Length: 431
Image 1: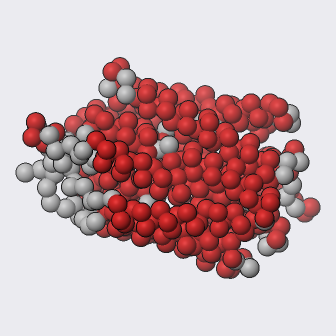
Image 2: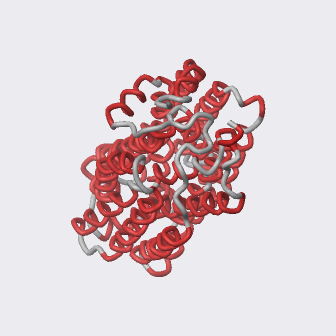
Image 3: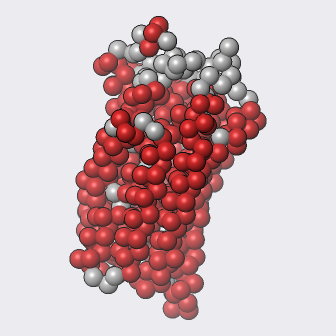
């Protein structure tokens, strides 16, 4: 044990890796969610319905993200993760630029497919690299800092993209998010070293798990299953609502792209960073060493935020809507770091990328396919013959908002078996 812990990476090196991986995650989120800010201009220029625009912007990315995510994660558990992250980053950033060059719905779909393929290689190997730079007792803190990439990226995809789109058109917003990603990919290639797997765990696993073995072990880890489902449903609820919120603000309250982007961007940046930091601080307290308390906290926070989200889309007052958005949107960041850490601590070191990939897969299916396409279809349906408008989108979002209670249920179920499941993961497959 002492020898293993003595192998901790030099302080500056491991923190540099964490900061760079956080930046990769930020570019990931920014490139994905820039479309939420410019959804309405894209829909109008390409002459699409809400369902059509939802399909073009979300579904192709999600399908190829999901299709490529597990094979890439399986590869990441047995090959150089640094190379996978850098290659993926350059790939999706290049296709983000291509989104801005698209002249038709088909071209936009093809570009979003490329973004999805590239982004599939981001989060699983990134979190696995971070896990091998920090010991288990510091891992939740490290992954919560990594999770800061989500609010920073969402800010870039909202405020920055909105300002650029208002000044130069929606196509320029994709250029602003794509070009920096290519440069960051080169930085990852040149400056990050691949850490040895499991070097900081109490018992280092040996060998390489097959895909069926990893899937079978995940199924036996009921707490991992419920954490993944809880995290996924939070993505369905929170990120599904956020996807359409800029468009909702444009249609309902007459804001322009820059104003809606600025409002959501500052909520993401200030509220999201605050929620992520509070989650990291809270989960690192001694009384939170019992993982059941972490899960109970996640359940209560999500349940309370769900009530606030319903009010946000029910009210006709811009002032009250702003207050409710500031109150509930930060909660969608609260679960990211703790859920990542819980999933990783419920997995043997040689299965971490695969476990993370399942978590990301479920989240993206719920968010980018079920939520985005579902809200688009419902909005068109509520709009009837005259087409979708502010009222139809409001009702569609009110159908989605209560699903946060479903996530709460999964977090409470996970708390029942999380302690024995974590014990089972320690040393699994070790010699």
